[in-house]
Image 1: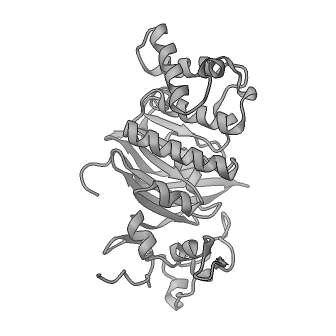
Image 2: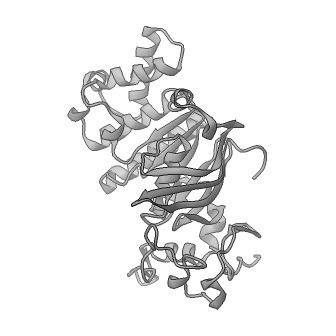
Amino acid sequence: MMGEPLLAVRNLSITLTRNGEHLPVLNDVSFEVAPGEVLGVVGESGAGKSVAGAAVIDLLVPPLHRTAGEISLRGDRLDLMKPRQMRHVRGKRVGFIFQDPMTSLNPVLSIGKQLTDTMRAHLKLGRAELNRRALNWVERVGLPNPERILKAAPHELSGGQRQRIVIALALCAEPEIVIADEPTTALDVSVQAQMLDLMRTLHKETGTAMVLITHDLGVVAKMADRVAVFYAGRVVETATAAALFAAPRHPYTAGLIGATPALDAQGNMQVVAIPGAMPGVGALPPGCAFHPRCPRAQADCQVIVPPLAPLEEGYAACLYPLPARSAQ
């Protein structure tokens, strides 16, 4: 990556304590986000994507614990900050969009109160300017009759309307980066498309960097500049979105792409599922965690844990990576 990263996560490890045992959830995870970049974080459920996002802004809840690693935002070590310091980082420097909008919204406060309170906590603005910006943000996220929306309680809005407000809340304090954790999963398909268009538009307008956590490769293809693929608590591939979709190097990435529904030349829907299932926490096989499901696995894959190693167009943690795309 060119230049200094905005967000740098280095060798992050997280464990889950169960019956006195410390089980690895994330193991030696590293990734970067450049200023203004959208990093797509993908993988099956349970791969550790959401845990990594929560760890960035210290939202891990016991029995999850960070046991190793550094997290830096423009060189400031977030992992060393006290809770009081982190409260100033959340919202002001790092916005967060949750999968369930009701997780982010206070059910007893009006939408307007929540927007103005968020901005008041992080921006030095008078009441009139706070109210003006709150109205502006409701308009920017495409909600009609913004005056009515500002007076409404969350339960008076539809799921799609609430998620638009959550996006406004994540951006209204002008953060440097937003972490969006499955921001469209709970929405109807038609509303999902609207939400993605909205997020893409606001990203272009504000220049805010984004970590987009999703299991949906279609969302990644539309939104991301680069992609980090998670499997069983590790990053197994990183590349630009263009390179990754053109020629995935890790067999798991190829499997994810193959498992995405697509039409063949005859107009028939094609899906090629990855056999087996991802191992659960505390049940990792020896060697490469993907080897029981991998069509390219050899005997040494059952013994060696492959490091995330540089390739021609990115990085992959695989002893037998797929071939690079041929030069045109």
